[in-house]
Image (cartoon, rainbow over all chains, first blue to last red; front, side, top):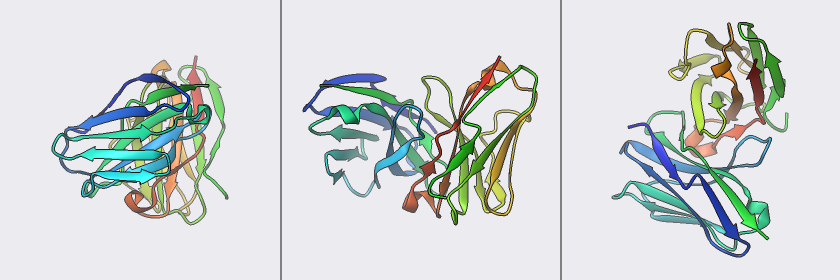
Amino acid sequence: QQQVKQSPQSLIVQKGGISIINCAYENTAFDYFPWYQQFPGKGPALLIAIRPDVSEKKEGRFTISFNKSAKQFSLHIMDSQPGDSATYFCAARSQGAQKLVFGQGTRLTINP
Amino acid sequence: GAGVSQSPSNKVTEKGKDVELRCDPISGHTALYWYRQSLGQGLEFLIYFQGNSAPDKSGLPSDRFSAERTGGSVSTLTIQRTQQEDSAVYLCASSLGQAVVYGYTFGSGTRLTVV
């Protein structure tokens, strides 16, 4: 119930392409869905987040798509750049809680 | 400080020894969190502090793990009688208030290796 399942584990995309990372959850009490970006040797940094009352949120080249009925959400990186190469984590928070439940992470590599 | 500071950045310890990991959150951040990141795994929640109290310590894996926070600021995570399975990166995060509104700011972590 508390799990967030993330796929794929690793992803290689050509420069300029679209990177897509998917997450699925079971707990309908989740009410906040952030994505974090982590570079080697650094802690994760908040990238973008969405609430379940909207189906899409866009910030620059990064877009979250949210499908409440399917209990799935995804991160799309448009015009992917080598500097986007990092590990990406989806996460979710249960209503009333403070802690986040994280997915397993996706290692993204953008080839120049 | 400008960010969340963790020390040491790396720690190698012998099995059975005790270790202390330190977290200095961003000044004024009332919420503080500890997570553990094992190789190839996601982040595993350990404990959450609001001020000096810990309303959620449900993620501490055993009674060998403990944490405290003093003065609403610095936090220390202590692992007693370390085991090889404790090897991981221990991440601390702080938040101005509710994480939903403000998000977490993570430190760079302490890489713990138990040999």
